[in-house]
Length: 300
Image 1 (tube, one colour):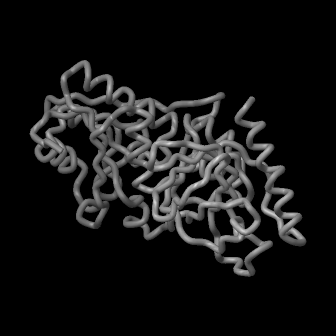
Image 2 (spheres, one colour):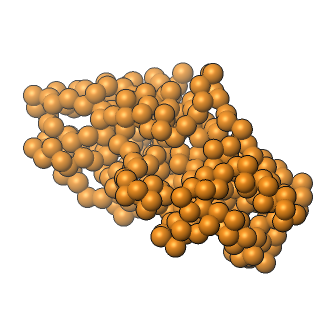
């Protein structure tokens, strides 16, 4: 990345890259085009609350997915993740702005109305605006964004995902909920039933959507995409390990070896809760019903 370029920089964590974030990022991109500044997103690899208070925040996306969502949804290519360590945590708010100006060539900063930064969160939107004005650089504060009369927030979307309200979560996100992982070896139980699956995991620190079966789309490294039936859970019919949570997807109309490849899943519809069946035949019959439900959903 060429840091000699003057930049308009969007500041925030952007977990989920939801509609509120998109309003901020779209402004950043458009301002960059209009002013000749390079649109750039500056975020953090870990949630600041983890360093500041030692709290674990279950995130909507990994940094990998967040970066690619920003690029895919907004068209901004320059995405930078800083490591939020104690040095950054203790940096005074005005020094932080100066650092962005000197080291990142920030000539305009864009942030949300509730953005806090600097040691003890002393910096806020008002101080950011005042300091930028004093330094002679641009600043834009984006007001809250609502959808269907509800303020959009990452915490609200996390709750919807955990409740299995995937279609509602996707409305607030403005795009399908995304999970990317490398395909792993599993029990191959589905292959024995004639319904092979790709096996993935939800990375540590990422929110687990409600256990159950979803209609999804799988995007492969080859560029292909397939409708899929995705089960998030512990596979109670074939496994006795209550802690072994996996993400298993049967790709419709696909045959091939995907082991070791990176697959992106987009979840669209919650079909049913996870259930323990009496045996393989009953499970197989239910999976065929789930396949039919998925085809019906996407063919609407």
